[in-house]
Image (cartoon, rainbow, N blue to C red; front, side, top):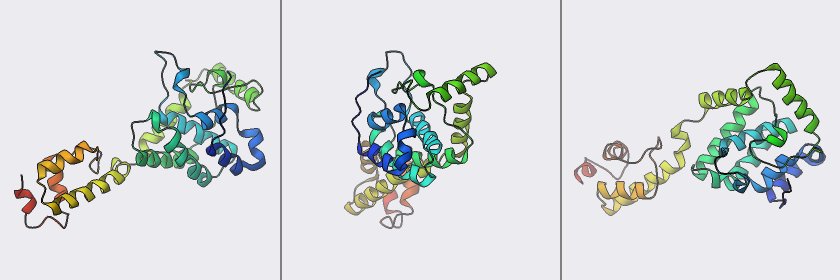
Length: 238
């Protein structure tokens, strides 16, 4: 698979973090993903497109394998995911940052090794028989196949960890909610009625503290804690 490498700032920074180790541990698949993200053109109709979380978790596991500290991985990967993987995600940029931070934290705490699928990796990333890890990864794949475990065991275990420990919806949508509160306060000062405020928030895609669309009841509950709404004035404005 011939892939043109663009050497993005993310790869440059990664090489600086790894220093001399980078020559041996930035494998072709990792360099490809760092330079290009997930390239959808490589997938045929009907192929499963790996979600952002899969790419993120794969790179985090590699970061740990490569010897980066949790802090080094987190600081580098958060911006990488926000820039390079946002196109394959419906999550907001702030949500991607929160999610990436959580992925890094728990993968570094979990006993999950970095194992690629070599030429059959799910990201269709570049692979080479000259990769320093190729022989070792092939041996691990053969050993895993001979032992007969579920090929998706590690991924399933990681998914269980992430589902159990992933950040709450309140944390994920915190930035959007804070923006929504600013809009609400501003509109209240202008004398805007509740119905119009709800329409404005939903049109802008600003979610509630739990990631839901705004309704009369939700807005009413939030209005009670806003200084601009006194003595039930907002409740009377329909």
